Length: 183
Image (cartoon, rainbow, N blue to C red; front, side, top):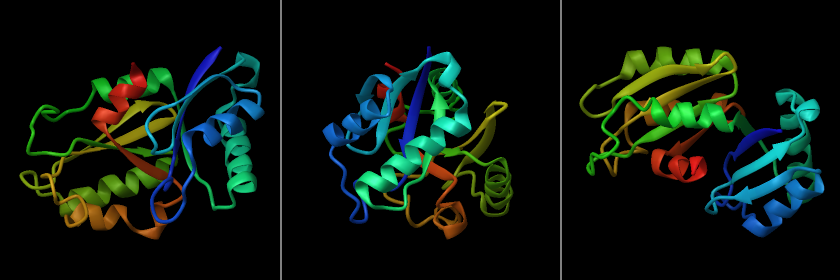
């Protein structure tokens, strides 16, 4: 079995509301096993038989099903449980600093990850808006971001991340949420 984590983008914000129970039902209807949602922000942990675990195929099935059932333009970043654990473990900043928000930006597209890294290098303020790009696996790159609390929509990098170009290929999660998914 392959253990996957589907990170849905834009769920339960901006008018797209999906109850966790409905989300879990959808994943079960697709034949996935061990389905569990974590928090109400579009995080689903599930398993597939190894023969059915081609990332692009699984991702496409889920996105189509989300669009059909919930009627919104659905995008997900699909990662393995191992990739998630590595992403959490490799957070390069002080995750216990109460004055900071520890974010992980997942990129399903290598070009988007490279563009974000380049953009981050041009706007990076190491004190106010620290950023680091790490390749977690051959299929997954993440951008670690650790802004001061209360500035996550105001920093230069936040403005880059909010560009429409990244809507279909990125999603971000707080490190604390990710730790709950790992457990």
